[in-house]
Amino acid sequence: LTELNLRGVWCAPIKNLSATFGVGMHVILGSPGDGTAELIELCAGLRLPHRGWLSLDGQAPASSPETRRHIASVLPREDGDVKRSLLELARRAGGSRHFDGARALGEFAPELDPQRALAESTEPERRRFALALALGQSSAKLLLLHHPLSLVNEAFEAALVEQLAERAQSAVVVATVASVADARRLGGTLGVLERGVLSRAVSDAWPNALTPGLDAALWVQCDAPRELLGQLASHAAVSAVSYDERAFASRLEVRGRDLEALAVAVSQAALRADVQLQALSCAAPDLEAVHGASAGLAHAAYRAAQGNSR
Amino acid sequence: MKTGSLSWGFADARARAGHLWPAISLLLGLVCVAVAGLVYGSAAAGPRRVPAVEADLVRGVAFGLVLPLFSYAASGRLGSRIEGLMRSSAARLGEDRRVYALGRLGFSAAASFAVVLTCGSFALSLTGLARPAVVSGAAAGEISFFWVLATAALGAASYASYMELAHLLGGGAGRAVFLIADWFFGSGVGLTAWLWPRAHVRSLLGGELPIGSTMTAAIASLLVASCLSALLYARRVPR
Image (cartoon, rainbow over all chains, first blue to last red; front, side):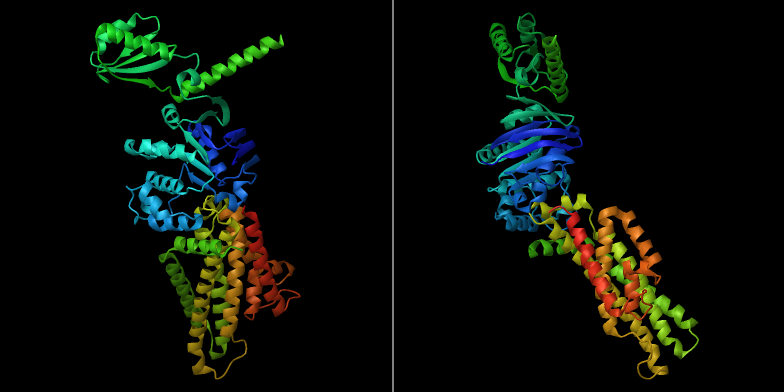
């Protein structure tokens, strides 16, 4: 089975990164400053590690053209100094990788003008073009995607997630994301990259796993938020309720330790107040909260280790 | 060797060069030869000085000035450093970077060859216009078109590969250092001149040979230098 291996890889800001990615979806959560861009370029073989070893099925992508032929990628920055049209480039890529590039362009990026030159395209368009080509290469063993969900509109998002899940059945799919919401949509295994260090492997992108010890937040959309707020304020499972009538006239934010207990509390309160619930969604914690939780966990582990040594 | 990667590199370099830039460079080269021809021609004392003017124009201007400067400019415009080659679309699609880089170098050499051959031929024809009226038959020291052609090929190949290597190793500063060193050391006839293409190009066109050198040695030196620097250039690039 295909495997992407990183052993002690250093490439600023990535520090001593060791990980193994097998067939399936792997989501790396982190900001560009944390090294997600460098990670994608390293794995694609477009950057050399300063130290360490990186291989796809035993071959280093940076020094093996044959290995790179099995890698499809969407880079953080797609170069756009090529004067050829998208269609011409898609055909060339297809010819090189044995897939129908023109068809991939039409199927996965129908909104792009195929006759337009790459140099005249905007950066998001170039990345969208790269995504179309990456999705078109059904034989790729490794798919590397930098912020894939930021490239598509809501209408295509579900289709993209489905497509990626399908590809993850037979290939290694590594996607870097900057938001917990995107990580949750993509699913798969989740790693948190923090200042170049893969600090945590998390079971899922829900608050209990990502930000343990911190309050989870629910967004409640309803027809009478004030009545619901009155009912929720005194509930034991709720630690805070906030309502901003100007920003979101029909939305409440409810905070509490346990997400499930919060959901139960909201539904009970809605029944009591005879309020019609329209939508209930889990607010995704931001990256700062995730990093804060990582720091808290590291501190707790350190204290525990100190206690054991005494 | 994969010819696909080679032609890809050549085509990418050609696309990067565009149409305007080579045309302007060629025009500048021709203007340079024409102006130098006017200056040398008016300064020459008589018809017997025609071969000397020809040597100055071909050796000094076309091959001594236009060729190094064009190669310098071409490697700046077309050459890539490691980062650029690492990220090239060809490499990303699984082409061999080394072969691709050699394709780029090939275009640089071909463009240098075309420019210097045109300028050299122009210089020859300028002096040829003056010659029939005053001198009959081939004069001593006359430069033949064959030698201009051969020297253009060897000189363009060696300058292009040297410049690309210098650019890969040291960027703009690397190229500038090579250009100055070539001018400084290559203009002499000592042992240090052996390393620089300027000395051998000059000797192929009837100029002074570096100490201990022959025409054959000059040709061999240019060939070896071209191959060696191209090899070093390719070796520096990850596959």
